[in-house]
Amino acid sequence: MTASPQHLTLLSRMEEARRQTQRQLDMIDRQIIRRMTALIPQLGRKRSGFHRGKAPDPSAFLERYRSNLAAITAERQPEIDALARKLGRQDAAIEALRARYAPAPGHARDNPEDGDRTQDRRSPAEHRAGKRHGAAA
Image (cartoon, rainbow, N blue to C red; front, side, top):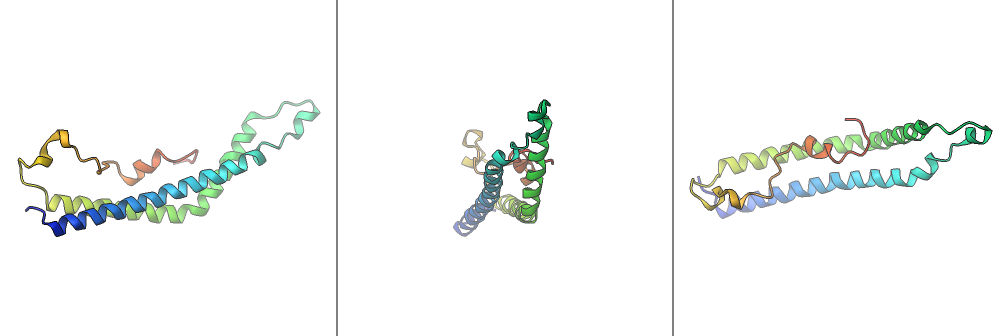
């Protein structure tokens, strides 16, 4: 079946909705990073042992950083999970629509040089995995 202008319009709307959902996830990641960046000076101030002749524990800062990151991420986790599920549903719907109205063989889109740049073959979890900053998977 060939895609009519209505189907192409629907596909472009679905792709725009997916991009918007991805922007929301990216915004949450940036907000978490911004909060952690603001906390870094406070995390490094616990050096009382150094004045008594002991060297500061280098792993203590990292431990405080990770615990604060986990706490901040946990606050936003329900929102992150909901958006990730929504992104997965949008990806599935877009794929189903593309499969249903795939162009006939020999069409210009079948040319590998005209690759579809808007489609990301990674799952939402794989896409977000590269964006996690210090959080355990």
